[in-house]
Amino acid sequence: MPEQTELMQNDATTAQEPYLDKSDPLYIKVQEALDMVRPYLQSDGGDAELIGIRADKSVDLRLVGACGSCPMSTMTLRAGVEQAIKRAVPEVTRVEAIM
Figure 1 (cartoon, rainbow, N blue to C red):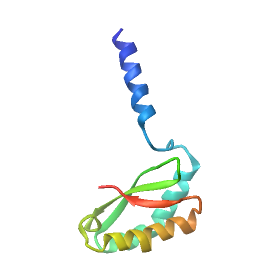
Figure 2: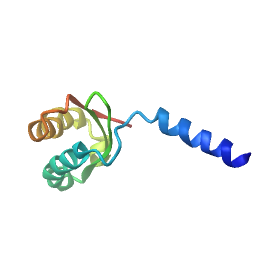
Figure 3: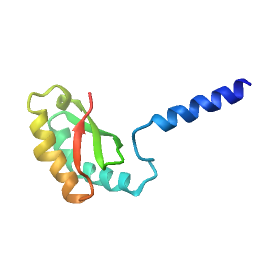
Figure 4: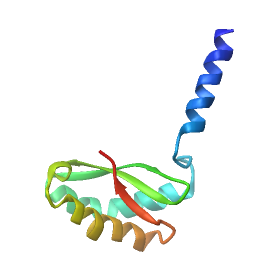
């Protein structure tokens, strides 16, 4: 019986996951767009990691390093990262920073 309980818990965890499967072609496109702006973030001591893409095509990112604590991070996210991703991947509806 423990195997069945474990399987049910794994299914429940997977069902609650709000993100598209990482094998979705959208992940590659978004990652490539993020890779285009990454050098600019890194030149200021920051970076961004892709957390996931939701079914509504919104992208969750985590700003790390200097970007995580910078008072201008919202502007960087909206004017820089979000615009670059949306330009390269028009299907994306918005980009949100996850803490």
